[in-house]
Length: 260
Image (cartoon, rainbow, N blue to C red; front, side, top):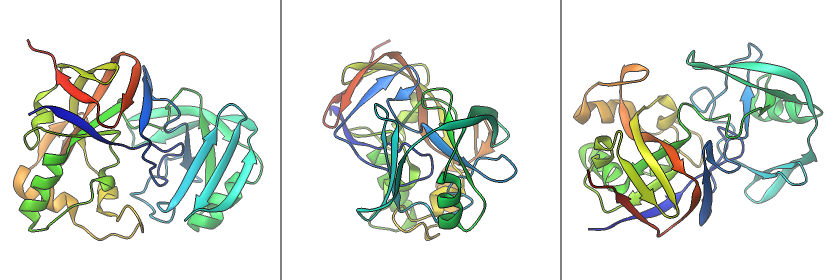
C-alpha cells in the first residue's frame, strides 16, 4: 500500500493551537514559519502546554513580510501588532538546550501573561524554527494513533494532541520507528528518518480545550513499555527527521522509503 501525507500541522508560536495548511515548504531548519516564536516564564524557561493549557485554543498568524503577528480565538482577533525586538535572551528548553532569541517588546508580554494567568514573555527565535524541541521535522503514522486507541479501548484518539508536523497513512502501526537513518521522499522534499520522540504530559491535554482528558503516557506505556530516546527512558510515540533536500510537501503527496 502506498503511503500518503494526510495532515500537516504548524504554529508560529510554540504551544498555541495548530493550523493545518494544505502545503508547507520544508527547509533545512523545518517548515517555513513554524515555531518562529516561543513563550518563557519569569525564570527564563520554555513554557509549553505541559505547564499550561490556557493557550491551546489560541491561533497565531505571522506575516513575516510585514513583521505583523496576530492572535485569534475562535476566529476573533485577540491582539495584533507589528513586532519590535529588544534584548537578547537565552531560554532553557527542557534542560536539553539553550534557545537564543530576542524579547518581543511592547504589549505582547502582558497580553500573554493575562491570558495564561502567569508572567510570560514572548521571544522571537534567532534561528528559523528556533522554537522546535529537538530535530526540525516529526513524523507520525495514522496506524500508530489507531493502535493506541485500540489498546486504550477507544474508538478514536485525536492525533493533534501529539503535535507532529507530518502525518501519513498506509504504514503498519509504529512502522516509522524503523526508519532511523532511512532516506524518505515526501512530496518535493527528501528527508532522513531519525530517532523516537519521547512524549511529555502535554499530550494528555485536549488539543481544542487544553484540559487534561486522556492518560496518554500511561496508555502508551501499557502496550509499548518504557523505551530509550535522546532524553533517556520514557514513552515514545512518533519519530524525528531531518532534511536532505528542501521542497514543498502537500497533503496527498506520496511518502516513499528508499530501498537499501
